[in-house]
Image (cartoon, rainbow, N blue to C red; front, side):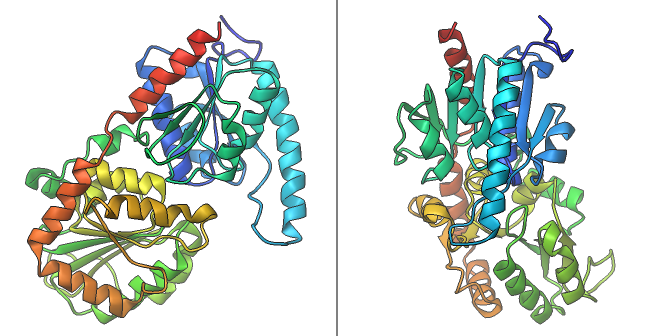
Length: 384
């Protein structure tokens, strides 16, 4: 059946976004629904005009609708007045969209971008499925979870109504990443990094992290003459210009001899290859990051974002570290000197790195997207 807007009748509306860490898990569920026989055109995505979904979703072949709004700061601020007004407008538009499309089910990954469609689904009695992959659910998910038919969660310690522990949904590219010796060499060939260098991946999430960026800039400068190390620095698009200026003179080393091999990018689509090819990763502790580390089996030092809502990044990191699958470094401790000492310590203990990698791989959920897609199908079928 066709809807009035000319595409296949809507089966599901996926909602949420802002960062790649929100968008990619939702897209993984969308792909799993396609694999289960749903037409790609029957799956829509609703997100924010300010988020990365504006280009990530169309690139994945799904239709996207972008609503106004931005996150509300957890302190008194005049900006919050504009944020609340934008959210109100988004909720009205979301209600109109869900009323027009009449999807069989709405799926939200949370955040301010997921709230309008979630509230619309509740108001219009459209079945709602909540995906919560942080150790502590965000405010938006906690608000709507009591009305959801099912809540798919990544951690057993999460406490939401009607929850099912599935793990966090992952992209096929992540699931295909290979950290065997052959896979590692193939990944480094794709990345342009020599196989004999110790490859350090540093990233602060798709939007970047100033503390991590400052630390790795200092580290890179102090290691400028090092011919045994490569740093692949994903600085975040909004920080790229400042980091590029601060690291002028550093860059990738060609086929000849040289010092530090330093790669700087704003956003990296080949992150699965980086996680497969690196020897150690220094990262924030967003839920998607933690899930990808576990799925691929990458040893890491996690630097939780201080002030994250409900301190969820620290709890994400501790969930992995508690299994011996990562190390945790506080934001204040993330300095060039502390990083240098920790990296050299781990380089001197290859068996310890191998143990961390093994523990990470043992904690991964590789079929989370498929489990959630089956859950979505079940909810839609029961609502007939």
